[in-house]
Length: 376
Image (tube, rainbow, N blue to C red; front, side):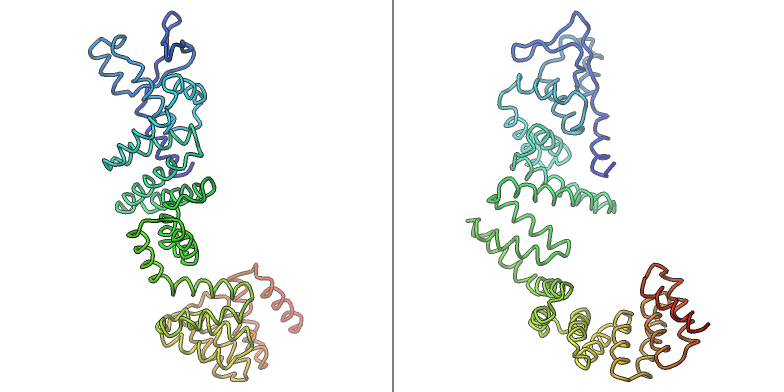
């Protein structure tokens, strides 16, 4: 069960159920309710009636309706929910408007835990209600914030993801619901998805007429422009479009001259384009910005070895392994370097260590088998 479901299940404890006797009945909207259907009611309401010994007189249809809405909000898969939907429609043909009104009233009072149940009940009745989805997403956001404040990070993350999903669902239903674009941009930005944030906000700018909000988003787009171009460059790199990736990276280099990861990605791109000398320069620049990143030593060592600087390459590999002697990639690459310059015992030792660290890597396994055959 997800953290969100656990949260709502816990709230079900506030509800008790009335079971009508055979000779008792409740009429809603001119129709008798089947006595086999248990009717939910807030436990507090029930207890008050029992204490006053006036339970039969004080239980009103409105109490049952509120109980139905609540149980549908906290448990959308409850056994009698289809029956409850029928009861709600009998009570009020415009029940969706009533539930939305109650939820929005709680939301405006910042009673998010109450509001979220009503919006969830509304979505139980009509999952394609965009206003219900939007306000449900707002409540999820607010509850997530509270959980983060209480250092309940796993729960907070679960609620935040659910909020993102809610806003995304709106756009499947109504592609012109501009507030969903507005919210999603922040969700993507805060999760480090800068390119998605840029694209979603660019769509938003085309459909909202609110000048203040649009100015706010213009400023946000300026802030994340560099991150967005960097992410776009990475996507192009990993898809094999190295020329285009390099164009994106170089475009932001002067603005992000202190980003070791940008220098590293430019180095990787030049390496893939067989411009090894340029790659080496950028890897060294990356190391000047952060000397603790083992991947930089690994790639730099490979490039230095490729141009025949064997001793320098081994020194770089050794330094990187000194920082992290559990990094199988750099240990394996040092083993290959030893092998190629004829230090077979050292090569075998490194490859065996790399294999123990990651026996599932097919390249390490194949190379290990080849070394064993040579040794025999």
